[in-house]
Image 1 (cartoon, one colour):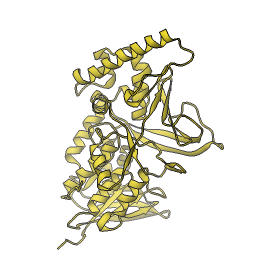
Image 2: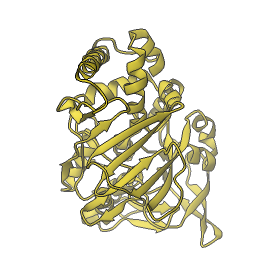
Image 3: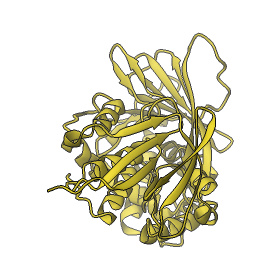
Image 4: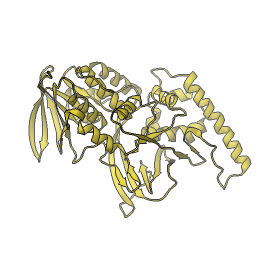
Length: 400
């Protein structure tokens, strides 16, 4: 006989990490966990900024991935019977453009002669081949940041400035200085695993994933309460937690046996004092994403850099999604959606903080989960892995 749901769990946040953790605990075979999700916004956050178009959904921010770097996310999608589709890209830099996976040679722009183009291609081919060689055969140490590693392996400066920094800054959604401070193991490891791998997206958008996780499967729908902003969490180390939050403008308290914080480090530190000092050592930044009505080559990602920052423009389905605009995009008829999200960054120091958290996560009844809660690039794979870690620590089987 299943046990009665007697252990109350509050999940704060409804991104992929929060939804996955809630789904797993809600579907515990022994039915021990009474799970509630609190979301501060009016809709679940995983696909809150996404758009629907006549030709299909557009995820904002873009949610492409490779099966090689995202094996746990891939298993979740297979388990939920959510298909993926290929998403080939054309990366455009100021001096040249090339398709993802280097499927064909960069085309010659009209202003460049054939001899100039051939010399550029030869230089690019050599620099890129050497970069891949260094990733596999000159691995970084735990203490090296990305900038230190690139200097040690002597990558060509022009190649770093014109290719590596814009491309990887777009992946990490940060500026060049912030990327140079990333643990070299993060960036090099990402490149090693994804090299030559095809990019895919959820065929029906991450909104389909959000719906499936909230529907809850055999256990029925997961309970989610919207417009609930948590202010603080208190309680004895091994006892229930008193959660103070806003409901209809009034401050309310509730008591929960376990709390899962599926929010960014700055929010964790602001509402749960025991983790404030550790969270202050994990950098974050605000990133603007603007969707505008503008034609472009389908699948093209235009990378523009200025003053150590990179803007990424993704053209899809008659729209252009601009991440980190270099110049302000004013409101007007062309702007369809404008959103700001918090991006968690990485550093050699913050990597050690996260690794220490993995060992003690939930020992006091409060767990942290998110794309930043694993030893890798801050991407969707970390959301799934950290949520699985909570389930396993609470004795719940992960079904995928």
